[in-house]
Image 1 (spheres, rainbow, N blue to C red):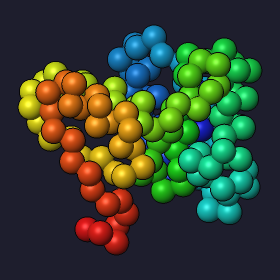
Image 2: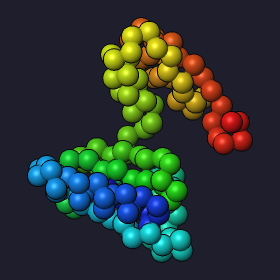
Image 3: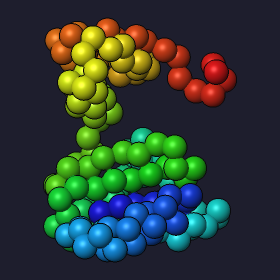
Image 4: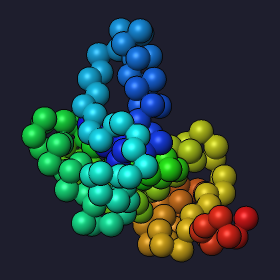
Length: 141
């Protein structure tokens, strides 16, 4: 289940779905708010805010989806939901991704932002990597 939030993700989600179908992949995408509309008629597309998660949560539950993915409006962040529609905090996702990256790149540095330090530092260190904290946002680049 994918919630594009009426933002930039919609056309890319459509292209991914078309590619899956062309390959015969057994994947069904349930799409919510997939049509881009800069007026954002279904609310602010920012799933980081708890009040903006209901449409994704409800669609996961209604359709019995295996998981939910919600994108922000400009399609530079995604947020994951489990099969019960529960939001999965970013530090768990970063931990899972860090383990996967370190498996392929032992001893690598994993950059994280200050908001995700708790689990990330422990997971990266335990997997033999080096956690590196960095400020977030385009103003720091």
